Image (cartoon, rainbow, N blue to C red; front, side):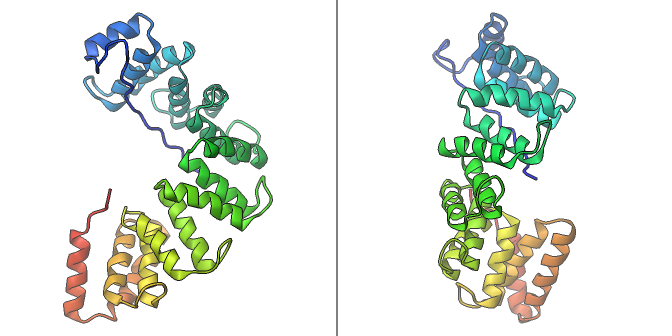
Amino acid sequence: MTVLLGVCWFVASPVFGQIPSVTELRKAAEGGNTQAQYNLGNLYAMGKGVPENYTEAVRWYRKAAEGGYVPAQFLLGVSYSNGNGVTQNYAEAARWYRKAADAGYASAQRHLGVAYENGHSVPQDYAEAARWYRKAAEGGNAEAQFNLGVLYYDGQGVPQDYAEAVRWYRKGAEAGYAPAQFNLGISYSNGQGVTQNYAEAVHWFRKCAEAGYAPAQFNLGISYSNGQGVPQDYLLAYLWLNLSAVNSTGEDRLRRTKARDAAAERLTPQQLSEAQKMAREWRPKK
């Protein structure tokens, strides 16, 4: 199942020529300016200059959305999907996503694709999911590029095609989307859709591992442990396996902890102390 993420951002308004104060913004919003209504909703959602209040955020998103402001239609959909400020309602979420998607808004197209993939208040329809993912992906949405790649990999809604999956993973990966980078690394590791190349797999695992993506940290640690794509190095294996375990929960954490402890058995006490110090001091790259 694909997780929906809602992101709030501030759009500077040409009405003011610069970022307005909350008082100016509210005055414009109450006067019917949809961009101001949207921005005021964002301030309430983020708690910037006003108390954080999702209900109030939704109230202003709705005004802007009903006035035809497309980004507000999208965030109103996100609010319904996540149950922020309103009772969770996937049907309402899909309705607002569709309005923004029909207007060409890539994030809404991607979220509508998620609704069809998961059957959230619309019939589960992988072909329809692929159609909306493709629209968003062709518009440059990295998450949709990843989603479309997954459908090609699984053969859901489109013919199974590993090379096409890799093509879309690569687009998302080059845009910096960690799951796409990870899946591209897996493709190189397994030789699916591309010639098997462990060094290239490590290259992509490292990119998202350094950003804090736990599955890639685990795979990078295993690569160092096995000497695949990199020289065998149990100290670095321990570092990445430890980070992956700390950043995981449940069964994943147990499995990754077991792998980390196996790497620790290959280290001297001095090496283990050094690896633990490196893990404590490690910070993700932005």
